[in-house]
Image (cartoon, rainbow, N blue to C red):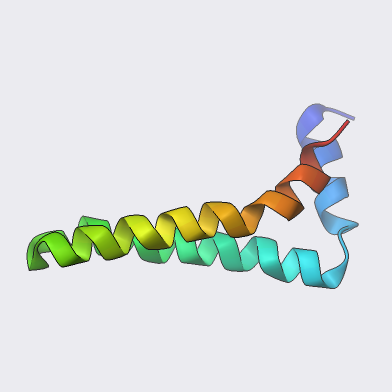
Length: 70
C-alpha cells in the first residue's frame, strides 16, 4: 500500500462525528475561499473570508491529526 492509500483507509475508519467535522471543514474552506475570490465587496468581505478559512482550519485539526498520525 502506498502513502495515499493508507491515509484514505484511515479516513474511512474515522468515527462518524470526526468524518462529518472533516468534510464540514473542507466546505467552510471552500466558502471562505469563494468569498475571498469574489471580494469586490471590499474589506468586510476579506475579513469574513479569512475568518471562515481560519475557522475551517481549526475545525479540521482533530480529524487531520487522526488521519495523519503514524
